[in-house]
Image (tube, rainbow, N blue to C red; front, side, top):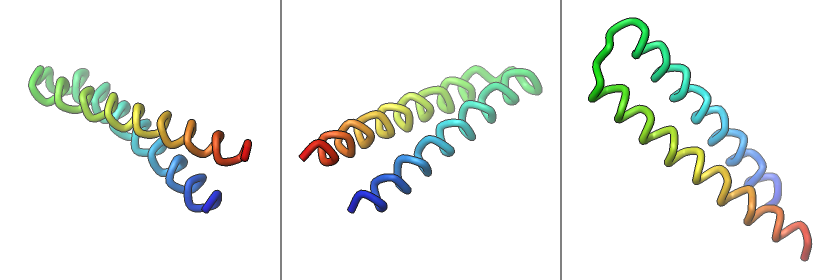
Length: 63
């Protein structure tokens, strides 16, 4: 269970980084505010998911 959550948190962190980089590159290359806004919303969702899973994992490790 701990390994699964660790891998899942890692995947979410990498996905967050990927969306962040894609959003920044998109703002530099073609300033499309709708696409940038959508990517930044996805970044916030992925980042929040990673934090929630990290908190769950830490609470399971304390038990």
